[in-house]
Length: 480
Ligand code: NA7
Image (cartoon, rainbow, N blue to C red; front, side, top):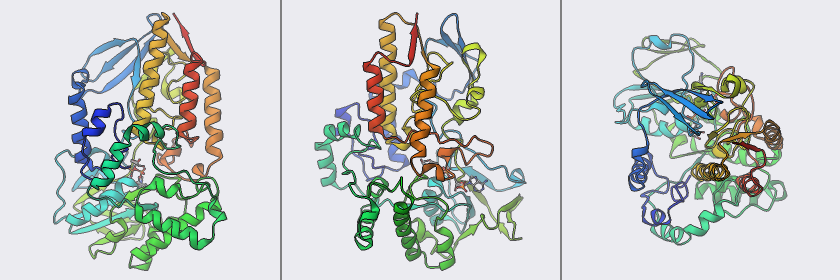
């Protein structure tokens, strides 16, 4: 997502003063921005770094949460706000011999802060989601030999990243307040893209492909998915966009067999995170980069010196990069021993999949809130917008309750059940459940297959939140 958009919106001064050097800020630039925001708004003093929360238990008599940390501290608080993230619990596959490998191993979600130098090394990357696709071209620049182990091919579009265009920046900054306000009325919380008006199937093939080509050159996933109204709801419409991207892959990748292996064919385009890349497909034209199809020949085992696949081939490797993803959306919460009313554990409550009211609260867990919890648009939206919207909603409901001397706020079970049902109905009216994605929990063996984000659109979600707030928080029971 473009940095001018993907940034905090609560300070118009910050919006105007901050200069993003590139269209899509890289990791360093984002970290510099985050540090600046922390210093500028004096936030660091309120944060305890390097501390793991191990348990959080609700005390029914006091209406307070008792929180314990790995530093041996016990803290009691009236409200517990889980800002534990949706993609914060990295997962490595459980493959035979994994611990016997003698070389270095890395996970893209736990990357060393001072960087890694792969110069002269034989490197293996396992996983081709966003993290794999975006890191592979960088690793290829350094590695002597790069083996990419791909189980499932994904769709990726060119980011068309580059230095910030000063004219575009000036225009965006002039329109910032309006754009920020408009974002709220769009499905993904991103303004500036006119909503589509036509079905992909109403348009002649030549015109359709010209539209996809224009969007491809422009870069960005939202613009591409906004080509037609029905790309995410009608399989035949979706196929037209998927075919276009597959034809691009075949043009870019010189070796026809590699190109075919890179063509995704098991899910509709956009139903897994639509990746943006810089030179991903072109990287496979380099002589030292090899794609290994582990759908056809799975990894059999790790050895001291590398990886063996089921066709009897052995790959000698000095370093392995696990780009194998996260226990998404519920993983971080489930790692903490959270117990609500009557000793109910969150793991028990969510054993068949998450249940929440608006992705903000869970029935049975009074005074506990979540920032972009499951069944909110979070990961299917401009995430920073959604975080801020939740922070505001939670701040407002707490202020509302306090103003009425109510010390306890709890999602009603009825309201929660209705929201879960609505969430499922909305997901089922789309193509999203057709993909084995982390949205579905499909990447974690044994995790319930439930579609977790709310995909009814940010505009509808925000309207619902505002309506609930204006009506005195129906569905959120309050008591003294
Ligand atoms: P993803 O999108 O979950 O991708 C993980 C990749 O790792 C994916 O290609 C998986 O293949 C692969 N994987 C996972 N387990 C295995 C095993 N056991 N063997 C082989 N390959 C495996 O995670 P990312 O970190 O790339 O991205 C997560 C989000 O972060 C992304 O959507 C952005 O929002 C930012 P599979 O598809 O399961 O066959």
